[in-house]
Image 1 (cartoon, rainbow, N blue to C red):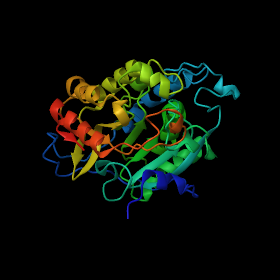
Image 2: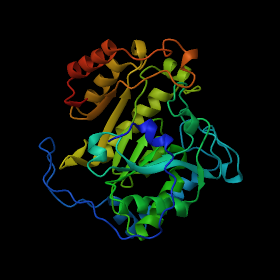
Image 3: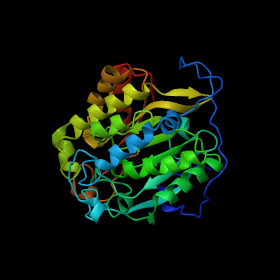
Image 4: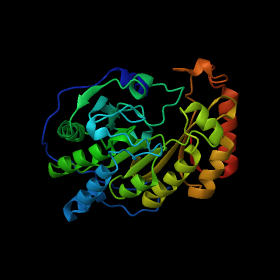
Length: 340
């Protein structure tokens, strides 16, 4: 039986992995009618980037942004290489909170075998209503090396995961790409999913072109003042997130699906907040106008008052059914076709 994402995290699936394992190719066959892509075996572009030496160049460019840290729009410039913690509370070491086959994500991502989910500790957005605050704010998890992260990726592939999904990857992009290079040399060949809050540096996202197969950004707010209040002071959230998501869409386009399983594209997320603090009516029009009416969008009703929500009414109550149904009506009126 599928479990919730929160339950998946709480299980803390930190288990011993294997090193090099045999590759398992991801192959597309008959495509869903909603896509116009020819049926073909899908080979992630990162394999050719590694073969050509381009991935090594991108890896170096990302590490150059690591210390002083300018990996995200907060531009905290922490000397992380020397152990100074950034705005995300991550320093030179990094942690993995849990990993395993995840069935709590969207169906096109988890498919029949599950998504290879890797929940990374810490976060650069730091929402006051974070449902996984022990991981994102407190940094709970097990200290992990780049070599071990590569082993985890290969283990998830060996166990039949349809992809490798990095959850909250923003502050650890250099480590992820370094681990990918190790894993590629040992047979990694399934799509990479970038599951992010959306608060990203445009420069970093451009460097990920061809490295990431599927982007899953969450565009939570459409008003900068509201975003600043609920994200530990990120008044530029809307500007940076909009620019980053448009670049993601430029790279991978609308979600491409074969036999019900996504292998490339963008899947948008939007958490509906009480009293429309998330600006859902603005969000759905933005997606239709700036990306495509065909964009796949999860308009989530799963808000509940977690962490410090009780300090910020109306976030001290759950979303009502009426509020969620209104959000769905807005999506339909905006012309979106693939939303739920």
